[in-house]
Image (cartoon, rainbow, N blue to C red; front, side):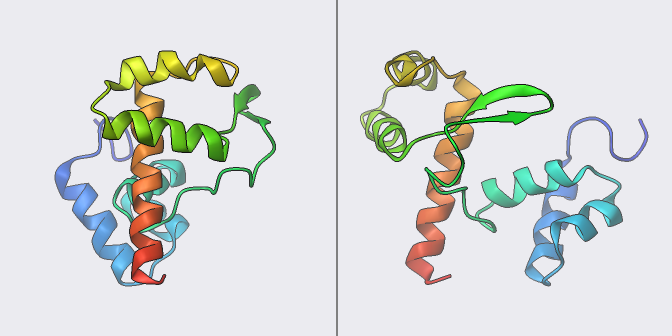
Amino acid sequence: MSAGTGPVSAQERERIFDLAEKGLKRGRIAQLLGRNKATVSHYLVVGGFVPATPAGRRSQIYFRNGRPVRAFSAEEDRFIERLDQAGVSHSAIGRACARFGAPRKPHVVKYRLCQLAAAAELAEAGR
């Protein structure tokens, strides 16, 4: 397997975090590790180094790789956080999101919850 393909190892994840703590930008980290910038961005968000995109900052529908993507609204964010705190599974939360226009996949719910938690931590830290 060549660099930049396949799953990110725990060692690579730690290296991403170390380089981010030293102040390197996503693009530079990706270049140094031979990874895609989006991969690095994902781990920086999940790791709490970068806040989530605030709800409402994007239009409700935007395009990624030529496919329409429905942005999260502030109301939907509150809804999924409330269900998560109640112990509802990500699959069930995703199905319940149909009330906002379409269901969400479980991994999308999980990732959004990580983004929201990271944003909350950064806000508490005053960053």
